Length: 513
Image 1 (cartoon, rainbow, N blue to C red):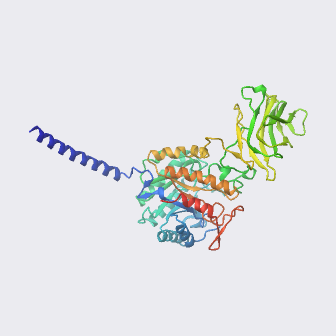
Image 2 (cartoon, rainbow, N blue to C red; image 1 turned 45 degrees about the vertical axis):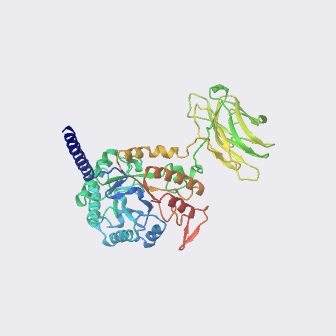
Image 3 (tube, one colour; image 1 turned 45 degrees about the horizontal axis):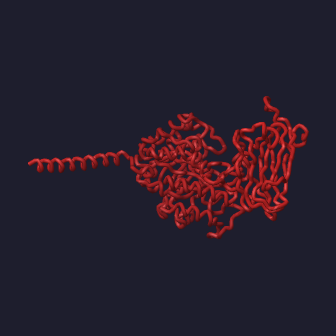
């Protein structure tokens, strides 16, 4: 009797638990949430890998999208395109609400190409009514002006009506490119109102919101909003991605980038700062005739530098800014200490007269000096410049030097540390359930090709690890795999275009779904 009752109880409990699980799972699914944060609005965004297409990026260009681009992107193994639009391409001049059907049909055609070649199409307002990160500045301010906001919303409602019924697997909306010049609160309000307006027209449409502050800051307030993803960027650090980019002020003055981005400490402390005093040590296979030059940027007082090679004296140099006025001038901005800034040719040069495994440069008398650059010229090879990063209050490091004179990262150094730090808030928001996508990334053609590829590989590794999809800026052009204009690439001919095969293969390696 007790056994039968127990079995009946066990059977009913089992049915109750099963029913409860079905109810919970059903409610969870109907709420729009998924256990996989990269799955949203019926789309697995982790599988998105592709490019930005720029035919309507500016009003001055405003040309139809090319079927060949979609065909080649598909043949190369990619499945995503983002269309950054200048709103002036599809409205009549001086009338924000008079839409040009001919231009809109170009966008329709791009979507049809996407269907034909199994490529997702993301529509983005790169220049929106009232805002663009690029010049010229808009007459009204999207973040504060009611007319601009109403117009912005009406544009997105127009797109929502136009493409209603086309699944989000095929088309998504990316509200506005890289917000800046406003407050977090103002940007959030514009996003919330626009998302609501789009979903009133088409509740199932996937809407992508760029992070605040040029896509760098995710917005936790959007986590509960259904059918919404957020987009970050892959341009960090800009000294790698935008080196000598004409639209980046001062980028032509940046030092030529290297990756991994490891730099030795530039401070060389002497006995006055005995707690930090230590020699700059270069370890490698230095042949007789190797030239080494130290370029200085700042000094505190008079110092004496001594150089040894495998423990044997090589050179000594007294740096006295008070008497060497051709190379130094007083730092007028510093009132507490008598510091001097380097001018002219403030350097210390020496040559090795025999082979050596270790070269040490020590500040044996005085306070401190900052070494701005270390130039190493191995016999028969081109000079290699190693730039430093001045870190106050830290001892010097041992620098491993390659046979070519290049700086090697120390053991345990993580080349992606800077990238990980930038990505950290995006990884956190993804863990909390938000879908994250990299709407733009890439490296301009003036960065050395090997540096660009090494940097890109570190980004791709991180995104693969976190299952973030991505779109390179661009397909054809200075960031792309076709017609990039790089001078240090062995191109292949691809239907009359110049193909960067190495970059393509790197992207293909990380786009396999």
